[in-house]
Image (cartoon, rainbow, N blue to C red; front, top):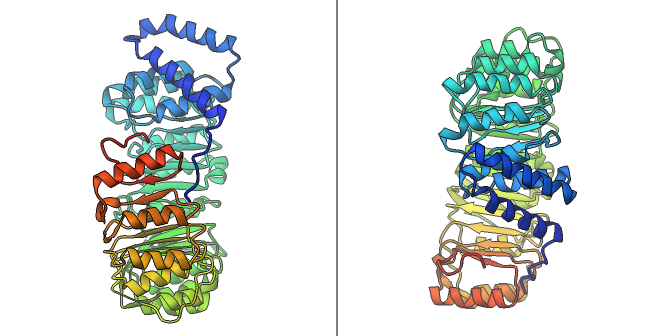
Length: 488
């Protein structure tokens, strides 16, 4: 039977109660003048009750992430609780009229922050001087997320006023050039040593020139990740072929590149020995075989690739691979061959398989996550994946499921799906209430089951099963949620 809902920790219940009280109080504030007396009363109450910094931190996180709340409530929460001992702040989404007010609060009250995420407050144009002041004031930041905001001047201010930043997110559509990157890194040796992760650019678009990104790679010796940039290989190739310093090696652990050719791959192999995750889109023939030279690789992500090339690679290094994320394959993908070569595989995600085959029932002894969309899977292949994965936790199949209730019953009675936590078959017209009940009875850890609108499952049956789940305190979500099923 699916597990029972756990009793909520007293800390979580108490925090929710205190948050609701604060939200109710702040919802009555209509202006900053109204807030002053109310803030004094609330602060006095919290002080008398012995509220700690951790409580304030948890409260501000809980309320700011509740985006269904009126923005004025979230704004006044920030104004009230952003005290000197608050270290982490994520603003969440705010409407444009609040941008200036939110930045002003952070400038005035956020000097002790070590982590700031402004995603949802897209500061531009007339608000940028405030942004410069914010960066000048917040010298203790180790993580700064400002997507769609940064320009060369922002980078210049970061370089002038921050020496301990480890993560910088300046991704999205921005006005960053070589000038700003050089200004940030020049004259600040502490910052060049501390920066390890930079999210920059936009997926699939070279909105920042690869030669400018190459500057970051060359001058940040501890850089491990250039998230959201899709042409890292191109940047590495530029360094390799343009006055590359003797014995130069990067510490990059993740690389994403498009239309990778063999020369670019050679540069990656030579300059990036620590890569753990590699993501290649539409690589040239022969490129995949060079991945075997990267000794630390354990996660492979590919788009628009030849199946036979991947199989040849995995024949050599499959024992190291724990995750495969694949899309747009050409040729025949053999799941049995993957099971034989990738004995430590924990996760496989596949979108758009041209042809899928299997042979012997070789098990996936460590596979926990299977997600396949447009997989052209036969019923036999699906049964093999399900019954040959004894540690399976999550199964998502986007194609039409041709199994019926009897097929599922035979599998569930013969095999023990003791670890299965979630199963999603969005298009399973031959499965009904009978399979839902059997899954609930047979899978002791099952907590998520859907998308049942694609099953032979009526709204009345959905209401009945949800009533059973609620009355037995069962920790199971049936999706989709209907109008009468919210909150159960």
